[in-house]
Amino acid sequence: MILSIKYFGLLAEITNKEEELIDFSRSYIWELLEVLYIKYPNLKNKDFQVAQNQELVPFETEINGKEIVLLPPFSGG
Amino acid sequence: MILSIKYFGLLAEITNKEEELIDFSRSYIWELLEVLYIKYPNLKNKDFQVAQNQELVPFETEINGKEIVLLPPFSGG
Amino acid sequence: MSDKKIKSVFIQGAISSEFIGKSIAKHQTKTSIGAHNIFLGQVRADVVDGKAIKAIEYSAYEDMANAKFYEIRESAFEKFELICMHIYHSLGTVNAGDICLFVFVSSPHRKTVFDALEFIVEEIKAKVPVFGKEIFEDNSHQWKVNN
Amino acid sequence: MSDKKIKSVFIQGAISSEFIGKSIAKHQTKTSIGAHNIFLGQVRADVVDGKAIKAIEYSAYEDMANAKFYEIRESAFEKFELICMHIYHSLGTVNAGDICLFVFVSSPHRKTVFDALEFIVEEIKAKVPVFGKEIFEDNSHQWKVNN
Image (cartoon, rainbow over all chains, first blue to last red; front, side, top):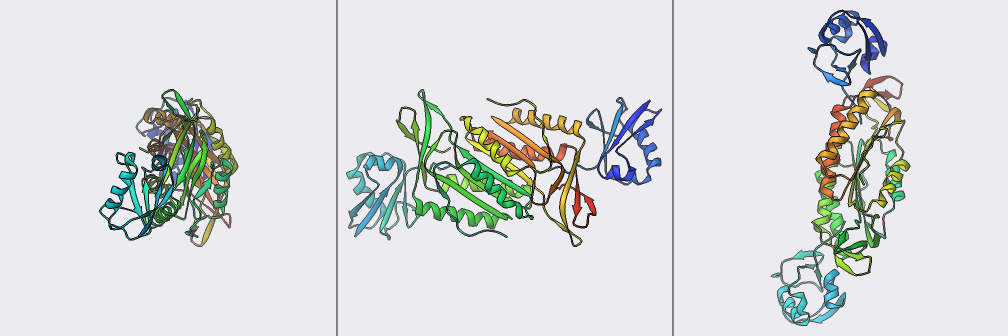
């Protein structure tokens, strides 16, 4: 499947992009992250969360949407 | 001694004045109140506090200022 | 940067939203502030026995009230890491819907302003000799009681 | 009288004191309100390694942020007896000294607004995906971390 991956804040600086399409053949968030860690080794030691369908989800979650979002620690307000 | 007595809020309505001078020969707040209860019987069943030198004081306090103030429950804000 | 000097607390009549807006604007040069918290007391048109309150007339034992406001201010600065603190209370007539109490605290951090503001407002309610005469539509009245 | 409909939360740039003043004024027709509580977040000119922060550039995952603001709003109305509630957050550049967060709650009673405001502000800090890029005087930057 084709996934749209979004990056925010510090993560967008590391990947040097805010969004990209990735053709992904496995099932879980953690499997997607393995792919991203190879592509962007500096992601690996960063503190971030993953959102699917606008909700934070554990890395063990199965991918069921078309958009996966990587979010650094929130710092609103 | 000549004392200045001040009344606020509901108490000023009962006494029909905001301030008066009273020639008083005893020593304690409670003795002054005895005098005022005779003058204004409706004061007796009202909830109020007494201030001397801008501080609330118990009725057992000795009078040492020239101004005694009768204050109904506070309702600021 | 703290402005601890005594200012007059009482304002004749209602406290306007413009006054509050300007008071906020004045703090924008103080760049160590990270959080403001503002409490506003507004006169409610409560209905008692079928009659609505149209206004409150505030009076105060002013000498003692100013002394108490000062004590509250000093103890708030002692207890909390505040940069600024302002208190304004109305005297005279304030119509239903208008603002009669404005308490404004500022600090580097949010937790400080939450704690400080609640402390100050509760102290004002408990310790400052201010009296509210609630005027009904038919000009009858009753004396306000805080809870 | 409660205005529970969804409004846009994000504002481009700083939130002005005039906007806040006008927002207060709009509530003076709501005469069941007795207490307002307002939180304002202001950008601090913190100094890090000798350089002062001159501005924060805010970005957000807007779809999720708006959904989270809506959830926070709904749960606040459920938990607390509120008449009104408004939240505004800046996006884009906000200079040091300017306001980036404005949370406004109104209720008949003061204890309600204290509890509600602190709940809402803490929920925003914890749950809404907003990111602050702190820009120093020399245009270098670091990413803001909440505590």
